[in-house]
Amino acid sequence: MLDDVVGPNEALVLADDSYRSTPVGPDGRSTSRRPNRPLKIGVIAAEFPPSHGGMQEHARGLVGCLSVDHQVFVFTGRDHDPRLSDGTATMRPVMQWQLAHDIPELERAPMDAWITLNAGLAPYSRRLAAPLFAYVHGKDFIQPWLPHPGRPVRLARHVLGEGLVRKWRRHEIGAGLRAARWVFANSEFSRGVCAGLYGLSGDRFSVVPPGVRPEFFQTSSPASDTRLRLVTISRLAANAGRKNIDGVIEAIACLKGEIDISYTVIGDGDDLARLRNLASELGVAAHVRFLGAVDTGRLIEQFACSDAFIMAVKPSKTDVEGFGMVYAEAAASGLPSIGARIGGVPEVIEDGVTGLLLEDVSAAGIAEGLRHFNRRRASFDRNVIRMKAERFSAPSCTATIAGIITSMI
Image (cartoon, rainbow, N blue to C red):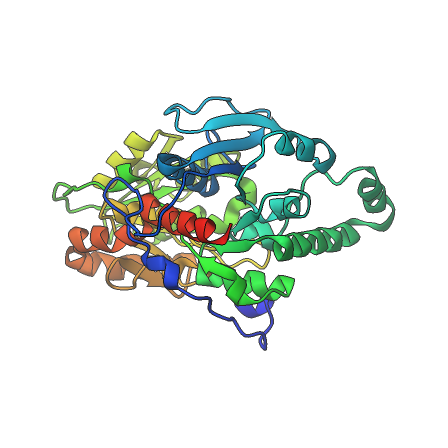
């Protein structure tokens, strides 16, 4: 799938990893000997709680941990609550995602540095005085969104079609990424694809995974059960079919009478009714339950009482799994994951140690993977999995980002 996006002859240049070992204490503060002064950091985030998703959770964790040592201001859309429940940052829901409107709003609050959390926001780097650090994920640069393009581009779309607008978007994002002081990528995979698509040097990136919030790091031992207890958390949207929840339901139907499976699906969206109907049509409705959207506490409880997290993502040319934050969240709870060997997923799941990587994500392939996992599920050590997830902790990842920013401004 990488060749479909980058091209077979484009080398993926690896960046300096020296910042990955930035030391942090248990409270998330840097223990580096280099003196750090508190910074005023503006975070520009189109995806931010209370809406749900991996990018929203990344934003929440990053802002919370940055606020330990720095003064953080979150600039987001007008539909967001101006308050954070924990009061760690100052919310500024002023963005209209139009450069002509947003730049004056941003410049009225001078910052030492800016961070954008979507590749489509990188063009702000060309208009802001303070250095901007861009974070990229996957779909945000493969199928880019940009702030409101304005009347000329809307007219061009109407007259010349969407293809021209797509090229314009990529041109603007590429120029924005080149103008940024530095680029953070959520995985080696994302760095390689983004660098190839936009003609950037890989050594202008640092790979920093999205941080998992401390509350996910729990010690738990589920009660013994002969059933294989699976859990998935995902947006249940018709346009997110690559998450392949229907493939897992079909695999459970294939194993009916062979393995006793209970499957819990957490999330909501416009595809929920179809998935419910599919489970009923396949005769496994009694084995599949849909909880809808739940809070973090309930999610952690489900991780604690399950045997595996599963999300067997299907390949897509227009939408990639750049990292897969939910696999890291499951690992923080000691829960092994079952995922596909695509995108950035192998950078989260260590095959045979923290979970199982599937080569085939058809219903039959998932069913065979579940047979394999069920035979050896007792061999997965939750303490080992939790320990290996520590490299994804939000305090550690945020300290790396903060250290790089501090050194470059």
